[in-house]
Image 1 (cartoon, protein in one colour):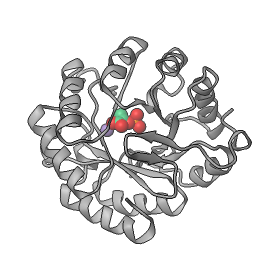
Image 2: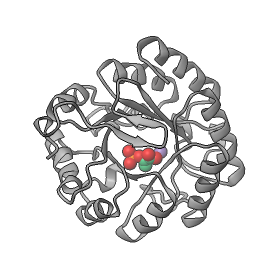
Image 3: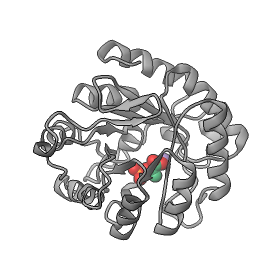
Image 4: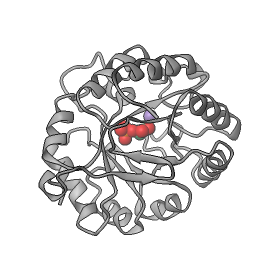
Length: 263
Ligand code: PEP
Ligand code: MN
């Protein structure tokens, strides 16, 4: 079902006024994690005014260390929902278990499945039946086939609103946090009808590399970009080093306008 032949024209996913998978580019921006109402509102206002179509922010954070900030949970979802109303912008946030997926579905426009959960099959089946659009990130060590088969779990239960997101894979290289697999973008665009996004924030782990790799991803055919933005990255509770300053986000959008159509 994920194969291109199933829908040769390509799948378009509509969320409010936003059409994902059309000729135009979709931009998702926001902090790694929702930290407070003040923090999210500040970032939401900035990115929305600069051209973001969808706001991101994690409430359930799958952190490598149990001692790292784990997210605000349902309180974070409530803050996201408030930002959604206040700034008239759809929101995407991650579900990390079948239980919290039910909660996430009540607040979010798109449910994110993180890299670490790409093969959490019970979670995939749950988000499939919840019926909301799903942003499926590529697993840290997932082949393209593994990734498409993970999407197949969702499609096979009747939910065709799946967006794939290349966010870098584990390789021998340690200078960057992950290795953004640009090859995967045109390969998956050929193999599948599903929209493909690029996440250069997790793909590089380095703020200064985010703009060039976002442009590269879009040049490779990505339907959208997802980036982390924070007004004070030094104080961010997660992923500060890869978060763009709002002014850098503005520059990114300006640069993207040169190579693609943004509405
Ligand atoms: C995130 O988007 O903040 C995140 C945790 O991403 P990933 O699952 O790709 O590491
Ligand atoms: Mn992050």
